[in-house]
Length: 285
Figure (cartoon, rainbow, N blue to C red):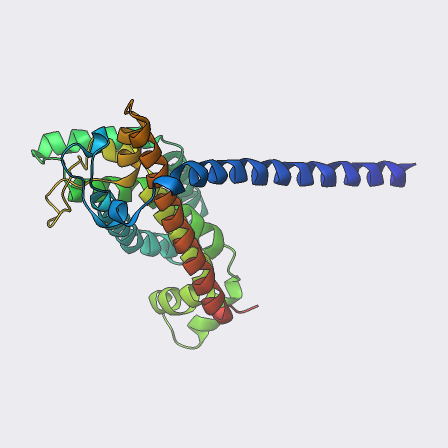
């Protein structure tokens, strides 16, 4: 009787997992299908290669090159800044502070809390700092704000992998004469390189697709920024402004902009898969 109940329980949860997967795939497929169905007819080389002309948001000529370039600048800048801070912090938690379990657990709880804060709060915080320092809306302000937003996400993702690295690896490295810093940046990074790349790509996707955090800090312009101190357009804000238009042609362009954003994220994801497979050979099993 007990074996029969266990068998029924196993079948139930297996069906539940299959159903959950089917729902996720179905919803994602509907979203992607809707975006490309409405966006591809309005997508053109002019839209990708030109900045907005006068009256673009009223259905006239031009494109969203300013938003594409601005989003790439913003996402790469914020991700690079988060990497510079995030990798050392993750290694510090798992190597130098490994013995201080309570302290490490408290820091991890703090980062978990930061991950749950809505992006609009980060935007408001960045805007408050801008007012205090007398800084205008600019690409630099947006990069710093988005870096603060994705930093906890990146650290948590890296930490989840680094804390599962066998302790014996650290001991073996130090027994051969390496110090903790050498072990961290040479041994641990090579061991977890594929997972770290995945964490970086997840953070990049969050950075390029966020709207609320850049609404107050990055500003918006029809020009491509040539300096970090200039305002910058972004694809999410461009989509928002176009969808807000009552003109159907402009709304269709919003879906085309969303399709471009989806394609960029897809390309980055494919690159991450290739890099993860390439560097996975360094992992010690």
